[in-house]
Amino acid sequence: MEEQYYAMLHELQAVDFVLVELNLYLDTHPWDTMALQQFNEMAQKRQFLAAQFEQCYGPLLNFGHSASPHGWRWAMPPWPWQV
View 1 (cartoon, rainbow, N blue to C red):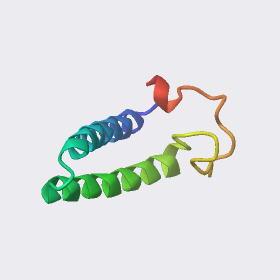
View 2: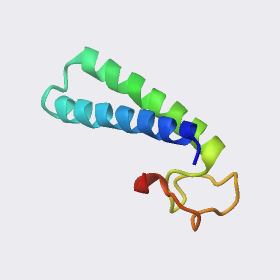
View 3: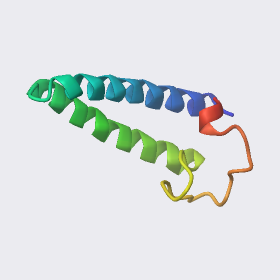
């Protein structure tokens, strides 16, 4: 795979980490409007990054969570969760 593939996955993983941490924080601080704003911004960023990745390399998730504009390539590794 090309270097951009791994760079895009790394950025998605970083955003996912931030979203998990903010989710945990907001569970105990639900009135923190700054944290909620940051969560919403990161969620939008993740949607954008995931759409970019899927347009270039195919779906990130299976079971109908992602479209497959590049044909059915699930049998062709590496899968995003294997990287």
